[in-house]
Image (cartoon, rainbow, N blue to C red; front, side):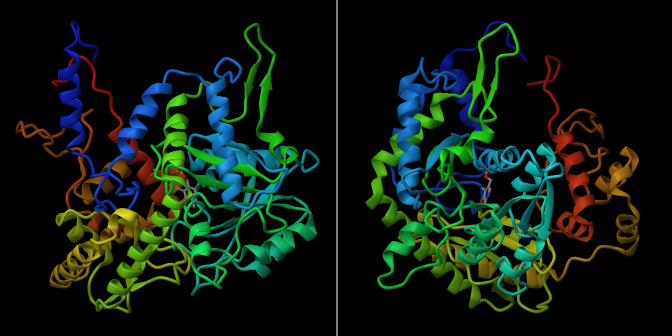
Amino acid sequence: MIPGVGPGGDEVLAELTRLRAGDAPTHGGRTLAYVYDSGLGDLDALAARAHAAAASANGLDPTAFPSLLRMENDLVGAAIDLLGGGQAAVGTVTSGGTESCLLAVLAAREGRPDVADPSMVVPSTVHAAFRKAGHLFGVRVVSVPVDPVTFRADADATAAAIDDTTVLVVASAPSYAHGVVDPIPEIAAVTRERGVRLHVDACIGGWVLPYLHRDVAGTRAPAFDLSVPGVTSLSVDLHKYAYCTKGVSVLLHADAQLRRGHYFASADWPGYTMLNPTLQSTRSGGPLAAAWAVVRHVGDEGYAALARTARAATEAIRAGITAIDGLRVLGEPDSTLLAVALDGEPGFDVFTVADELAARGWYVQPQFPYESSPANLHLTVTAANRGHEDALLTAMREAVMSAVAAGPVTIDDDLRALIGALDPEALTPEQFAGLLAAAGLGAGRDEDGDGQSGDPGRPMRLPDRMAGINAMLAAASPRLRERLLAEFLGTLYRPRTADASP
Ligand SMILES: *Cc1c(COP(=O)(O)O)cnc(C)c1O
């Protein structure tokens, strides 16, 4: 879809603005996943200007672009100072949390060339990024169930799961799903004794927890960082609670030797010697410069205030939700994340509550039942929610009343039987189409209102109400859910070519 003669810049930007108007809002605290709002009015403009100033520079060669090298060393230094790294600690700026986690696994695998069939021991609540790492790098994932009540990793069971093939143990600070910090000192004592690496996934908590610790006089929140003996690496995302523009995370290693395995060099071609610290090769200076500017501008005191603010909002929302009949918060959240589940069997559907919140302009993220964790709604609370907790709680109370009125969602027996009989490994296009149709997403729908049903190649639009689909997905096994959603994703990503109407 390349226009013959392109429209003017202003017109293109106006088109972009119109497109963006259909998105979930990234500011104001109404989107309680995916986005992080500091509530500070000047940060966006600063980040945008810094981004623009360096977006064309290429981190592929730090000798050609020393400014990027300098900014990366500054950011890594800041992360080391905040997160207990010693004199020997080093780090790498990556494109995001998943890349940081991938590199931690890659470095661990490469550090043990003697292990033919490498594995990693993870709590079952570990972020899916580690499953991806296992998949990509051929590292077997040994998943250890967490405590069914606290949702924290079980240190003894973790110890028991370590064997001669274990190249890495992972723990979270906190976990994404429940927002609880794993018992990292206990796990670290074991990995240290066994001589196995321990990665702490502090992607979402690493820029919050240190400030909360600092704040509460006389109490020490659970230790989780590189100062804990035995922790060998730690990931922290700047594009989460450091409130930086998307595309920046930091992976720290306790020393340079531990980091070496994720560096890649190839001189085996006639071009430049490829030399990459991350999965990317060409790396835009934009996200790095934006993060550098934001971290410098907000400063330590600014982050301490933002962390306190986000935590206070979390506490207020948690207390308000706990007071609503039929809802409860899972576990004892340590940071700024909440998982909201049904309390007992109150006669309504938790995913209907999400739909009703969406109808009122609030986005919360459905989390499916997994092991001891029931179906629930994930809330990422940020500083921008402070002062507006009541607006969310009012919407939540109204949503629950509507969900009660709507009653529980039921899946009919035929559909349940169909889901139960499907083999995820052998899902056919016909079966997928049948399920889509059952979910009201069938290709037979008239998507563009032209009276013609079924426009092949048109991306599918999500219905306003997801509770029925979510109930169906919740009834599917995790493996089947993966397959179904991957198929669905493929229906969304359909090119708009020259003959598609604008
Ligand atoms: C967000 C997150 C990740 C993955 O980060 P992305 O930036 O989304 O790739 C990994 N671990 C935890 C705990 C996270 O919250």
